[in-house]
Amino acid sequence: MSEKTIAGKSIKLSDEGYMEDSSQWSKEVAAEMAKEDGLELGAKHFEVLEYLRKQAASGEALSIRKVGKSGIVDIKGLYQLFPGGPLKLSSKYAGIAKPTSCV
Amino acid sequence: MSNTNQKPLDKVLIICAKGNLEDVYATLVMANGAVMEGIETKVFFTFFGLEGILKKRMDKLHTATVGNPAMRMPGDLPFPTLLGALPFVETGVSTMMRSEMDKLDMPPPSEFLEMITAGGGEVYACKLAVEMFKLKKEDFSDEVKDIITIGQFYEMATGQNTQIIFT
Image (cartoon, rainbow over all chains, first blue to last red; front, side, top):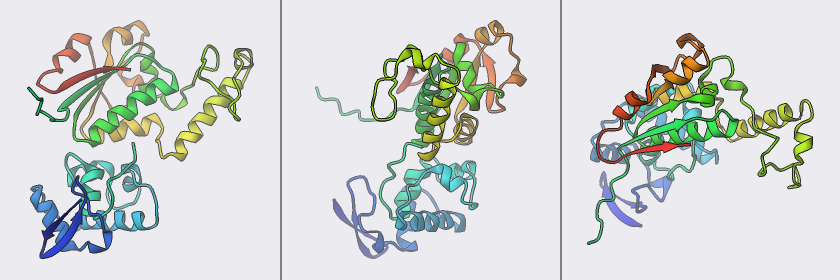
């Protein structure tokens, strides 16, 4: 675990870069984390992030299939929003734990 | 000399040659998992594996209740082969497996294939097997990109950090 200053706040991160404390999350933190990976977050990205945060808070297991059925974006769209890691990257920017789902 | 090259896979080619429910699913889970990790993914279905991409049959796959020593009954009892040979037993077991997988949010093969191609994965059917079973392109899921030879499939295995997996 490490601490890192993101968007002016000290954020606790796991070794893989996921936020340890979901309550430290803000849109600014998400945007800066994504920017480091070379990704500019837009309105659609944030809709997905808010959805994932809500799901994670209710204890639901996350999968790209569920996101695809959420009505926010289909799976193809999800891949376009978060290239190379639809669930991993979105979870990272949503400030929730690394996904454990195999689907 | 220590190996500092911890680079993950760039590309994976997966071959599915068997048509049991569990064999097809092993392929689909691995292929989808690779796509989700950002790994370039190509899947080749051949021989009985073609069941997994046939429009008519892909969502009705079965598991073997005869000659399957790993098969167990509820309560962890052994599953007698003779029982598996009775009418409807195999259908019941296969239906049960499908419903258990659905609970784990595992989609049916038709939807799984859509998920794989949505992420840029490519699905192919083996030309030799297609000819042997006298099938046509329109018999297959729309997600099947092409019917190709094994040689064409190998030609895709270029670049470092590429692996071929046979399930």
